[in-house]
Length: 338
Image (cartoon, rainbow, N blue to C red; front, side, top):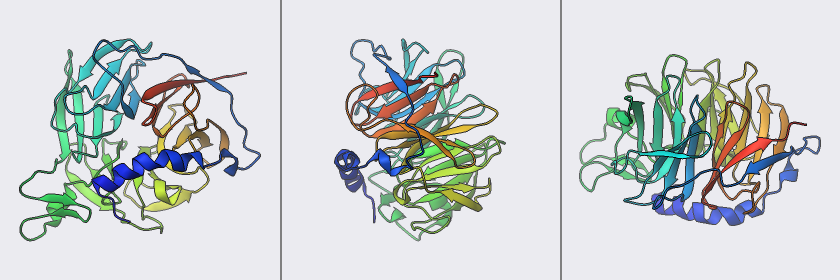
């Protein structure tokens, strides 16, 4: 199945209806539903700045919250709040790379990254002491002239160039970082592959193609790395998480967490993964041995319910931050530890 921009937008719009049909009882009955509550009115927006579709969210070491939202041309796509939800600033207003936001992450050095599947770009921002400034760009926004991005990849006006195509994305979805600063981009909707770069943005290798076999993908929608440097790819439409070594060699897969729209890992010595199953609109808690420890959430519009979970961030104290594309909001989830 080929995804153009129109087709993917149609998929986004149709997915709430499909999500309503998913049932959390698909998990084994032995897996407990976990108790939690959602913090009401978390983010305080100033006048004339709005929350729209929640594409991405991340938190820094101080607990500050960064939101990547789809607000249209002329809006404020990237927003920063303090740990209590008080507005701090907007970032990158008017930048050419913000067209259809998809994800935002911090790398291991505290730099902020955005992934935009409309502009086909991943951008690194560095804080200069007063504000965030673009420092490294990967990919290129499609132009009305020259190379054209299509469902079949980048089409060049002359002979096709492998070197060029390795530096370009077709609706990328997420970015992750290796132990030595390597950059992994989930080149999701159009190319169904992972692109690996060194810390300076030099292309290293690519792996994956459209398919259902080991190392193949049907929409790699999320990507993260663990404390050992292993790479976890949320292979959304294949309903699995595939695990690779840092060089892209296939190790194994998990097929017991539903459709992984988003993932995050805790910083604890014994890491825990939280997987957002955006189809069933629930969060699944998994240990690194692929044991499902619990779940919570169901479709809806009330606090603690979800409508198209698109991104999840693990807070330093165990709290979770969730974006929803259909409910136009961010939820902070606090587990009830009793």
